Image 1 (cartoon, one colour):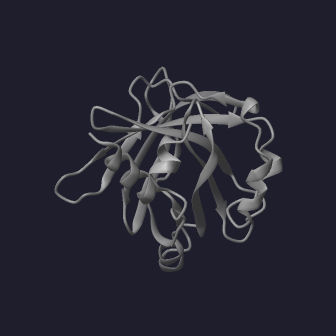
Image 2 (cartoon, rainbow, N blue to C red; image 1 turned 180 degrees about the horizontal axis):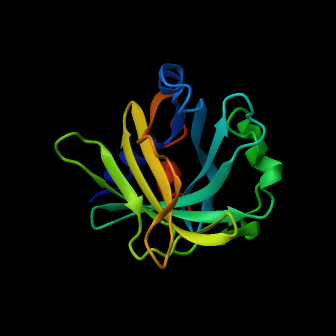
Image 3 (tube, rainbow, N blue to C red; image 1 turned 90 degrees about the vertical axis):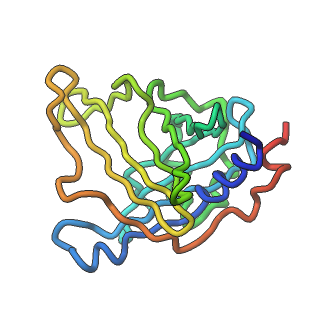
Length: 203
């Protein structure tokens, strides 16, 4: 696998995605959500990096999910490592105002062990199919107890489809997550203009 493959994956990942159509067609079951993957000028673990944010369209300043990520490729698997940040409030709303990301301090990032996403390219569609790394070790507290995360993603040039669910580590029973199938997002902006070989390989 060449760096060109990782570059293509990074450009596909970078963007703003919206499930506006889904929320309009079925407002009872799906809220209007925006997802952002914004490439960063800094490197994390000496690898190219992203900031991600998910927020309800009516409340962009209070995202319900934020993350920092570095990406790499290993034997045909595109790996997105996940990191927490102790000052998320300082960068909330960066989806619409990416200049806020200039304040990010890499030393405040902490790895989220067991929570990397692994993507493989489907040769028949050129879509990327992703899931949480094996092991049931991505633990998420919910309603006073720990659950393990099962995350499914399909990423393409024009879409991001995903479903997150939490399961009881002892019984494997679902505790939370979508009961109405996948969230279906359309790409409404590409954010990959800064992604090139220099961004990928810069030390």
